[in-house]
Image (tube, rainbow, N blue to C red; front, top):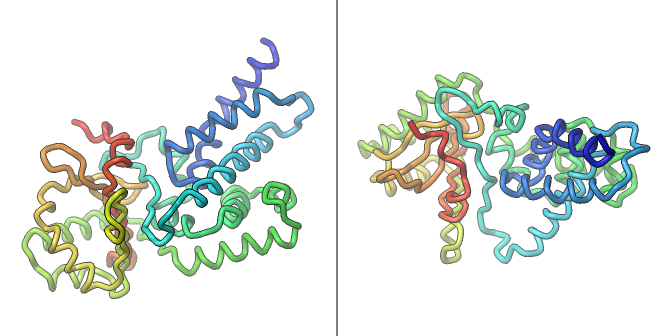
Length: 294
C-alpha cells in the first residue's frame, strides 16, 4: 500500500467524525459532503508523513474548508434578514438511522443549529471547534487569523449567544410526541385555545420557504401569533407524518405523498418553545426522505 492509498484509507476511517464536524459548521448535509470532498483534495495534495495526530490534522483541514464556505455563503446572501434554517436530519419515528448517530451526538437539534446560523463564521468555528470538539484555542487561532486572546473572545461571544437563545429540549421522546400530536389534533379541530395552551408564551416559529417574494420567509413570536398561523395552515394537518427530526419529535407534511415541509419541534417543560419549518421546495428535494418509506 503506497502513501496515497494509506491516506485515503485513514480519511475514510475518520469520515464519520469529519462529517459531524462539517454538519455543525455548515448545518447542511449536502454542503458537508462538499466540504469533505474539498478537504480530501487538499489532503491528497499534502505531505502527511510528518503528521503526528492525523485525526486532529484532518479535523483542522475540514474546519478551514467549512470556514471558507461560510464566508462565501455570507457574502452571497442578498437578504440577510430572511430566515435560513439548517438542513434537518430526518429519520423514521422508530429510530435514528445508524449513519446519522454520529451527526446527532450531543443533542445537535435544529434549535441549536438555528442559533449557530446567527454567528459570524469565525465565531461559529471557534465555538464548534472548542466547545463541541475540545480543540485547543492555540490550534483554532491560526484558522481564524486571530490572536489567542481574540480567539477566546470569539468563542465566549458565541457561547453567550447560544446559552441565551438555545432552548434545552425535554429528553422524553414519548412525551415530545404526545405534545406534537396534540398540537396537530388541535390544529385539525380548529381549537385555538388548545393550541395556545400547548405553546410556551414566548414560543418562536421560524419558516424557511426559500425563493419566494421577500417577507415570505419569516419568524413569529408568541403563542397567539403561532396558534393563528397553525390554524391558517390547518388544512395540511391531516398530511403530517410523524418522524424524528434531528432526533426529536417532528413531522414531514406530505400531501399526496409529496413533501411540502419538514417541521421540527422543541418541547421544554411540557410546552412547545420552538417550531422550525423547512418548506423550501429546492432544499426539500435535496433531503433523503426515503427513510420514511414503508
